[in-house]
Structure formats: structure tokens, C-alpha cells
Length: 347
Image 1 (spheres, rainbow, N blue to C red):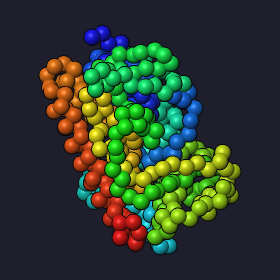
Image 2 (cartoon, one colour):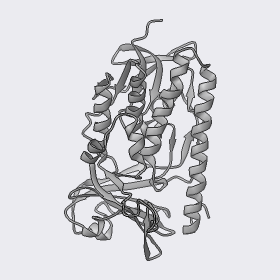
Image 3 (tube, one colour):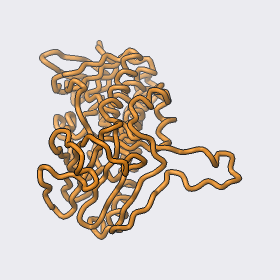
Image 4 (cartoon, helix red, strand yellow):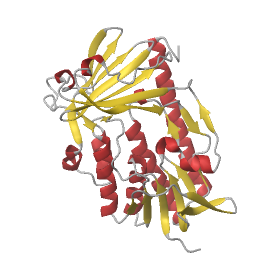
């Protein structure tokens, strides 16, 4: 059968871009579709210092990462029931250690520019990137996904990947069921512009049994906050964290369904779900972008020997399913412990 592409990936965020980059590094023909024009906002992301080696795999240099980083920080401020403490990424080094003077700093990235950086890297490797793409429909032959249809055009591909995040394009089209592991959770987030010296050095996580709030600087003079009410309290439309209320709001408050869920099937004949399209946790799990990158890389990695005829598709799919479900279960256990300490959800 003729194939227009080896991979057709729907969704141009970190998961989709990472999958495209990995597949292109294997010499594959890759199509990456993104429904927006790239000019979108998403909650700013705090990346652990250990993310740098992972980004080096797709060829992202420290200099490129620095261009999309709004701040560097040695840890996070955590406030429990009014008591605030600093949680460093690296415990204080002993004086006799050679790297005692080295700083281990996290990255506070601006998601719009971070995602664009990854797509540009994909393009540099030969990936065909289409912005403002219409939402496609999957092509099926004998129950096998063999491509997609967009604007009346059929595009044949050996592997179709859903990286559409919470839209879960392929999950909905194939009517794949999901398992929920929390009560319904809906996070609110927004942006503000100005100066807040208290957040210049590190993000802040404030939590109690009723809610938690995260705030951080994502660019030189732009701050992002995320709030999750655990008792159903609704926020007024102009709400902002107390320490940011003197700043100028940028746009209106936004929201996202962050109910913990995972697709019962995360891959099948000719397709993969990656990133939030496969599994969603609320932002307090703290490594959404990391998981998106790794799931995209893993899907492309496991698909390669199948395309070469060196591994059975079912075996590769089982490896992916086991890996992703295991990671999700571990994260759920940690979140239940976190919320249990607050006296809610997992208590």
C-alpha cells in the first residue's frame, strides 16, 4: 500500500513535536498537524533541572532553551497551612563535594514559545508542519487505522498519533473508553503583567484542604497562576492570587478539566495516544511537559522496529501500554498522598 507519510501526528504541542522529531531522526516521513496558528497561551510550565539532557536528544541546545526561559530557580516555595518553606531541587551540597558551588536550576518556560521552538526543530529535520489545520477524521480499513482525512483529502500513513491533549481527537473518533481516578476537577489559570519581586526567585505553591494555588514568573514581566478549588468554590471573574493583585491582568481567566483519567487503550493497530490525549493529571503532579515529551519519544521509538519488520506490532503496543499505565498509577499514588496530607481527596 502506498503511504504519503510514515507518521501522521495530530497536535503540535510538546508531545506531538517530540514524537515528530524522534521519528524524523529515524529518517521517517512525518506530517505534523496543529489546529491553531501557534499564537496560543497555555499555563507556564516549571521544568526540573534534569530536563536539559532529555531535550538534548532532539537537538535542543542550552542556548535555545534559554531563549524560551523566563526565569531560572533553585527550587520552589511551598506553603502549608500558613507555614512557608523553600524546597530546593538539590539538597545543600557538602563542602567537600566538587560541585558544591554549582547551582542546579529549574526552568520556568513560556509555553507558546517553548512549543514553537520544538516545532521549528521538527521542521529543521524535514517534518512537514501545518498550522491552522482542520480537525481530521481517521481512515480505517478492516479495523486498522491507516491514515486520516482532512478537508476532503485522504492522507495515508503507517502510524497515526493523537497528540491533541484534552481534545482527545482519536479517542473520541474511535470511541475509546477512559478510566477516571478522581472526582471531577477543574483548574483555573490566568496571566498578569508587571513586577512581583517575591516571585522573581522561585514559584510558589500554596495549599490547604480547600484549594491550592500555583504562581510563577514565565517571562521578564509576565506571571502565570493556576488555582484548583477542591471544595467546589467558584472564583469571581477577576480573581488573582493576593500577591499578584496589584498587577495588570492579561486577558480573562481560563479553565481546564484536569480530572485524573487515562485511556483504557493507549495504542492499537496503526495508532498511538500520547501526552494528555492518553492520560491527564492535575498540574500538581508537576511534570506534564516531561511526560508529554517522553510519551512522544517512546511512541516513535517503539514504532520504529515495527515499521522495519523487526518486532510484532502487538508486542510494541503492549510495551507502550504497560509503561504508560505504570507511570500513571505511580503518579496517582503520589497525588493521593499529597492530597491526603492536605486532608482532602486521597484522605
